[in-house]
Amino acid sequence: MQRCKNGMKLDDLRALIAIAQHGSFRAAANALDIPPATLSRRLQRLEDTLGSQLVIRDSRNVALTPLGQNYFERCQPLLDELQATTSELMDTSSSNPRGALRISAPVGLLTYQLMPLFNQFLALYPEVTLSLNHLSNQHHDYSPEQYDVVFRVGQQPNSSFAAAKIGESQRTLVASSNYLSQYGTPHHPDELNHHSRLATVPEFEWALTYKTDVAHPETIWVNSPVRMAIADLNSVKQAAISGLGIACLPNYVVADALEKATLTTMMDDWYSPPRPIYMLYQRLGYVPNHITYFIDFMRNALAGT
Image (cartoon, rainbow, N blue to C red; front, side, top):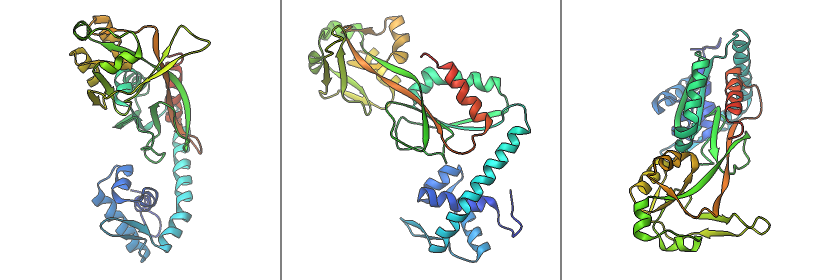
């Protein structure tokens, strides 16, 4: 553990910075990947070293004292610079990329497209480790302090991350042959209102555009009640295979089921507009070379998808 000349440990300073950035002990502990009790112990040790209270905490709220806020504002850029310099020196002293990658990605995209590429990257660079402990497509639950690289589907809000478009997710309407034999095959989006829809959370509405009229494309929104809504693409696919209804799923999810004929397509004159796939990463400051290698690898591997 790194220790300053006055006996203060850098891990204790990191604890204060994480609390200030995340506003709660639980979120700060998650960001540092340590138990909340360890975080509390490090903060207490820092306060004992300085002889001053830095954080006011009760059962619900956490706030910095004026002294704590001043200490945080002055120390954070110094610690960031120290970490960047250390990483840069480690990079230049090694010809091969090395270090830990912290990644967040949606489970469906991970399963069907990303994981094989992650495996290839790790095989190429044995001194790189990868941590992927947050599977989500939410647009508000990531920060540069938590993740080095984030993958998301759909338009992204402005953030402290740079966003590189690495592909598109095209969706297809699918159902089992048994379901269509029993309830009929729809030929127009309006007919979907009379069918059982299987939706992925939070995409309860489907936008379908008519293919043949390019000059004046017609888009119809289907927003009838859904029979089943699940936040997992594969589970929705399995429900469709079981004959529970019609689903609108990414092509990469249903490709195997279409090949095996456990699912079939319909309404081929209509399509769901593609959604962009983004790789997000820190836009400012020094980026360690193992992260740069990973970003370049993923760009090249997914080019043209």
